[in-house]
Length: 273
Image (cartoon, rainbow, N blue to C red; front, side, top):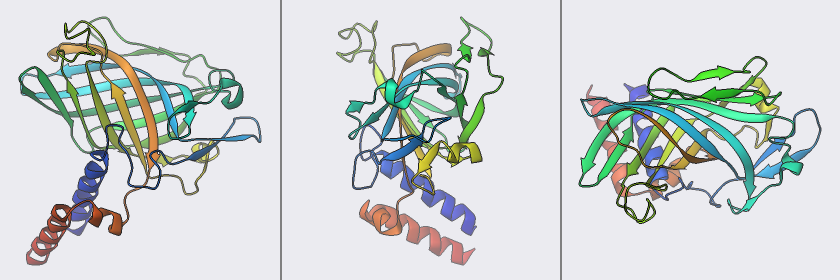
C-alpha cells in the first residue's frame, strides 16, 4: 500500500510540474536546467539545456476512446541559454560524428470537446529508449497505412537511457489560426507534453556526464501537424527534450494545498487499511 501511495503522489507531482508551462517547465531556478555532454571519442564537453528534433509516430485510435502510439524521434541539435541558442554542430558534433535517436511508446484515453480532441497519456503504459548511433546510418521508416516501423542500420547502436511514461497530455484543434489559417490543412494544429522517468546506462553516464547523478526525469514537448484522430494514423511534427528532477517535498507543497491534501488523505487511508 505504501509503495502504491508513493507512486500515486509521484505521478500527481510530475503532472503538476508539467502543468506549470506549455514546455513542461520544471520547478527549478531556471526554465531548462543545464546538463553536460561529453562528445564521443573525445575529452571535450559542452553544456546545453535542451535537445530539439523531429518525430514520426504511428497512432491507433480505438473505438473505446483509447489510443496507443509508437514514436521515433531523431535529435537535430542541442540548445542552450534557456532554450534560445542553438549550438553549432561543429561544437557538439551531433549529426557530424554520431547521431542520437529515441523510441517511445505509450497508451491513453481520448476525449472530444467541440473542435478540440484531447489525448491523455496513461502512467507506465509504454517505454522510452534513447540510443547513440555511432555510424549515423540508422533509418526508421513509417508505413504508408499498415504495419510497423521498419529500420536499417541499427547494428552497433548504443543504448544510453531508458524510461517509463509518467504523465502527459496533448490537444489537437484544426481550427487554430496556426493550422493553415483555421482551414485544418496545415501545421501547428496542436501541442503535447509528456514526462518519463530517465535512467542512464553505463554508456549513457559516459555521454551525459553532468550533473551526476543525472536528472531523474525527461520532459518532451511537441507540436502536432494536422491529422484525423480515428483509426490508424501516421503523424509527424517537432519535439523538444529537457530534463529535471522529481520535486523535493518543500517544492511539492508549493504546488498547492490540494496536492498536500491528497497526500494526507492517502496516508489516512493507508493507516485504516
